Image 1 (cartoon, helix red, strand yellow):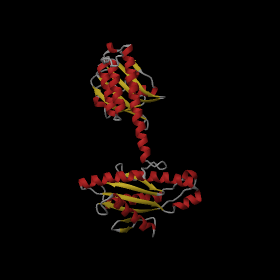
Image 2 (cartoon, one colour):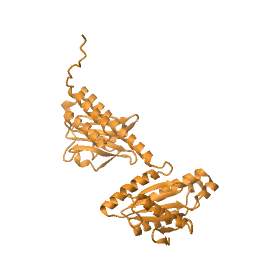
Image 3 (cartoon, helix red, strand yellow):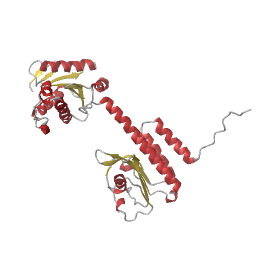
Image 4 (cartoon, one colour):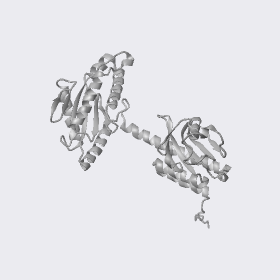
Length: 350
């Protein structure tokens, strides 16, 4: 008779248990902070550093920021490290690890971001987090227990660094997919699908806290003529340039959307009609004063028709508020063009 029972499960060695725990966290969560925190916690247990941190490369700003900082590095969380600055910046720039038990006068250890407050760097491990040929971040352990540094622990550290790189890349990939689902490819503004979800959220928040918000509906005047005279490629580039004008004239908390074709909407949280009108007048004048497609020698002047509506006076639903702004825009479109109309107020002199 064959014994088909499973053998009694044996406890995993400590290092395998660590990998098991980290891998489980990695595959069960897209919360980057929790994943990186779990990884750094394991490094702390193995190397017992005075200061340990994980910095992520900000490719847009060409520097690094602290995603995790603990021990004597905890106060660094709000700092940024320039590429090439100190040990972390050097490792990020060169993509090579640095391991030093006696840094001495090594210039790479002079960066302000490396030395914990009231402490000198006596030993350091700094490993790049690599994904293919790119450095995504850096793990830095300062004043670690030197006796813990063996071939086995370094192999362990490298595996954890690989886990961290995978976590960062996974989260970025998901963020990119999410961004593509809510962003208009041509202009870089949010798309109309995202408009309705964002407006619903703002509507609920405004109801709860008794706050106003406003919408600006924008329709470009005579845009079809641009396509007919200069071609559709020029028309597409024009829409992208106008999107930049819109983004430059609204606040960080405002959201701009391409509603469709040559129509745009701006959502202004915590903004009543008078303040929304000021923003709209600024947009109108900025559009009027800008010369578009200058790089192609065309020098286009563009006008637009604007409609404004606000919560709560112009509607209690997303559809009603957007509809009120749309109605005002068409009021302008069907008369003077290049002007502004406000729900329940009518035309406003631009």
